[in-house]
Image (cartoon, one colour):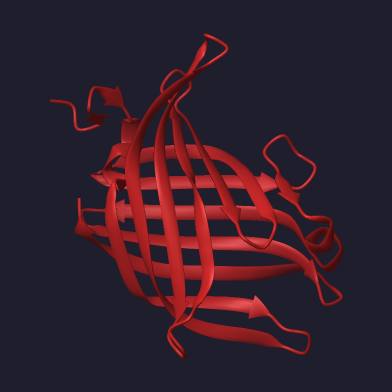
Length: 189
């Protein structure tokens, strides 16, 4: 059986993402008015197969739904909560990441996925003022405008490593590179 198929639906290379992932070596480098803030964190990422949809009777997308909950090591409080989908379009072999965070920010990023030697690599990007873009509340647009986003993921066996960069205009800083990195291990599949 093809390992990209779950319940009869072709998830392509994204099928291996399904599962419960946990990591405790995360580092968030975030802007502060006077300097950078370095926040060690741990997280749980739950990814589930969510079926497929057909758009305009032409485009078929396979969907993996996810929920990411991130907690600071210093106080164990949630400081980032994100929900979204990983989409696979078999016809074009395109990968799309959609995400929403409860700060009034939504994002649609596009890119590619490739498997080489058993290692899955995904890269997606989005930019303000592009078809693969960023939507934010008026407050965020004025105070902490997101101008770019990139996400790289590498999965080998039961280890998932990601790096995310959000480009912000905040606190008078232009094009600030807000980064998050972590290594996660599969706890259930």
